Length: 613
Image (cartoon, rainbow, N blue to C red; front, side, top):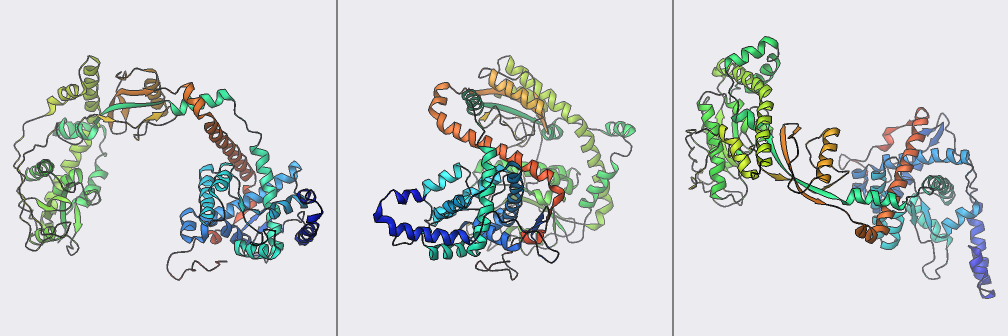
């Protein structure tokens, strides 16, 4: 570094003398070969690594340096105190590795780093995604402060470099200034310059070990192309789900003989589920239950008619003798109360006016004479009658028995329907025609009386604050096997690559391999050889689109893609290395987790300006 000044001639002798004096003062404050402190019995330690103490002030310093623009909110979001402590533990392990590998830090190396305005803080590398997030937030924070240019921030992020650029120069002379340095070190880390230099020596040593792991990693052109082709070649499939829930609702006819036959082989199988469901269904004095069919905001007349048809179908089941709680559990769109048999408790103070007025008017055992419309949708409401507890318990027993026996058969029915659709499409039928034909045997004419929509009470308001207006939809609709939202209907996946997952359905590894083989070797319009079994049913799959990456595209994107791939490989290599170090040393790492607890937002916690240690 000083050679630069020597080359500028005698005119810079005075500046050179000042700089040499500054660096001398800079260096003598601390020798980088000092040993790490060993914990005494009386020391407070945030962690101990092989007997060495990481003091709370060390953790506080690292945490302050990692925290973007002093944001406590960001610290809580990313759990930065734990991140900072993990980084310090990793730094200690890297120091041990440095001794093993014969890696060291000279006075000149450390001085050159600090004189150039680069300070370091360890970010744990065990999880590359978290490390990338922390680095990204950290550099964005410094970039927003104006201390780091976007270009410098991006380059440091790309290099996974935890060196933070700091300007220690006098604003006027643009020459390194010791007073500026002391002030910024205090603001940055809350440490003395001696302590700061000691910490930076350890950080630079750890950085050298990390570089020794990452730098040898290389990628070949063939490796880059293979990965590019894997990532950039994409496919989309059309899929038709045939769900067990649909089969249970429309394609199953369970009688007492079926239940008795099931119980012969499983005599106790129904006892626990019946007991649990009876607990939710048993009437409680004053309690209300409801079934909700949601409506979208600004629902059309057709959408209202469809929702009312579904609620009317649910009401018809209740009028035919099914327990309200069981129908609510199976059909209500209010998932929280549905799990409890539609139970809402006995208080109506917080309910919207139309619902409150209808619910308050009910006596024990009564159900609203029609549908109650609110901004959420259509409701059907019942008030519990404890006098009917024994009757309802018996109904729940029969309902649960039928449901469980039906569930044992519904998967087979779903597979039969899926295979019919699959076979028809292979024979050349369109998806719509194939589905219509497969569903047809389960569409039965039903006489269901459409519920009347009850008038809104006087003074009730809608979601926008205006007067609530309710009326019967002029359109008509039915709810059956062909209109149920769970019916087989075509859907399209997002684009996925060879290493991705086309569905969120939880495919087994073998199924994922089979899907990828089909998607990337078939022709558009091909139907997969067999319907795919997934949790909840069967899926008929059709290849919608297949886009193969090309060499021309690769050549265009090669530079940036290879950089990203190399960075990812180096991150992975360092991650494995660090995990190994931590595994070997796990019995020699002791953490006091009280030091990594983030401050609460309230409750007398520290303010954003306070140092918590």
